[in-house]
Length: 350
Image (cartoon, rainbow, N blue to C red; front, side, top):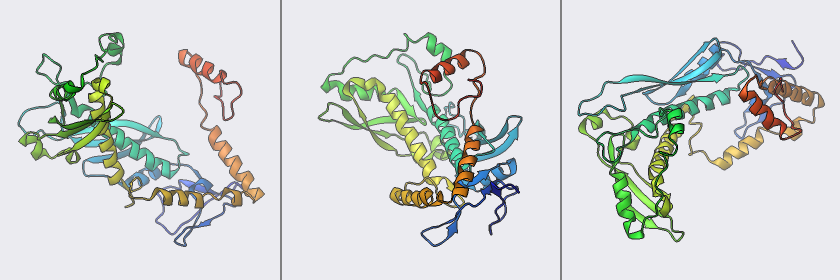
């Protein structure tokens, strides 16, 4: 057994494979409820497919959100699956359910458990954001068809080539015409196949506008489907500069994404604990963070300090990038060299 690492055994059910080892001589600490623990930053992690899968199995969200864990030739990954419906399908029929997948989120072997849990949460947020972007739809003037202009599926090369065509009209709107302008813009938009309605607007002393918008009723079929219930009857406010009404669509989408993110934060649970809920006192989290990091005291043990710093150095060194070759390598090399002497771990082939 090396001096730097030793195995740890707990009274909890063992993970399928050892995923972490405690640093030799690592001190423990007392929590506010009297329990004594060794904090995660005094461990070295060696995640496996079995250990990550077991960790993900302890996460709960809702009935239509799934978390998968597997590995391929590139390593372990976490992937979100969502049971939903075809966002672009209109009509008065109930749409069949379908399973769609998000991108794969890679998990390095040295990733701590807490960061894997956070990665799963972010994967869920981004998978839902992908759907939310498709739910916001707009009907261009002179057409009867809706498009999802802010979805992730727009062709970047076509957009780039048509940058002049994309320029938005930023003409200022007279104060008495603001309400009409907003209402006209909203009439071309919908979210989750629900109309958007202007409830009220108020001009602030700064000249900006507080705009109050509500989602209207959707079709009976959509109501029976019951998807994304958090958006039903939604009302929200946003602040817009009077001369930037062309940003209304972006602000509406931003509000919808924010609501989706908040839904994840409150419903995401790890072993029954809503880790990212705003019901937790942020000051109490800060206190626990300080309690779990008594570095000044712990580093008084010179032998442990050497182990701790050496282990962290090796972990950080193992994460350094490689520049490779080609245009991207030249671009990154130039950026790094522009700063002269940098601390940290430079790319191996700098």
